[in-house]
Image 1 (tube, rainbow, N blue to C red):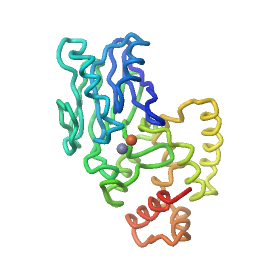
Image 2 (image 1 turned 120 degrees about the vertical axis):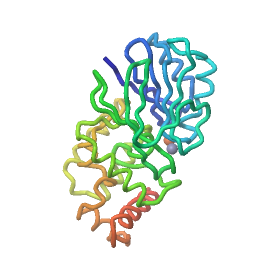
Image 3 (image 1 turned 60 degrees about the vertical axis):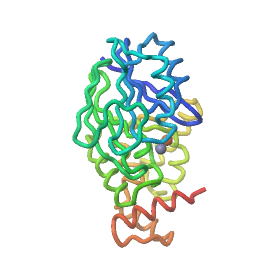
Image 4 (image 1 turned 90 degrees about the horizontal axis):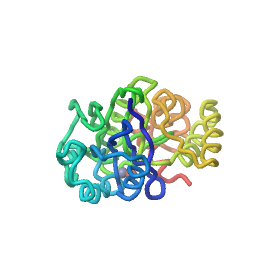
Length: 266
Ligand code: ZN
Ligand code: FE
């Protein structure tokens, strides 16, 4: 049986640990020290490193982790899995959409989706894990109630990437890489003040953050209900974007205008 647990890093990053009580795979270790502390606290061996995209806050800890762990539980070097289209230091397996990732320690299988937009080669890892159910590790593409900034991709690319994630089964848990939910919800409420699911979620987010509890993972079904970036074709969202002076003449333009609104939202 597998468990997925957050390892908080930097100000608001989550490094995700997938473990079976003996060995752990870590997703997007931007720094090594919190990972080391987590492994030591739980008596876990490091078994694999999985990267969604090239940004430093997602791969900056890889070198230190490999130095501390020259071999995994089976005595061979620890695999470092990352997107084929990006520069990932120490990568041993380059993956793209359609590929299957099979981890040995812990035993887990993922299929890879290309989700460009935040970065050009960003990938997501989709799995159905014994004990943890359906999961997606989506880095900085889809956030709880938000999405990543378009640093290297077009609105059309990001919209297509988010459409892929939104099409996953509704009970898929969304493991994103940042705790941005509170500010994302503030923006979402400016876009859709009449969304009752969103109002209820906003109250829940306030309570969770008050208690310093992570708001993630959420689920795909939940994101479809509250996340404006998965709802950019909804009439209410279109009207709000248009009221801001945004171009809503086609799906990509409307999505781009929505993302631009968020970029400038205070
Ligand atoms: Zn990033
Ligand atoms: Fe990030």
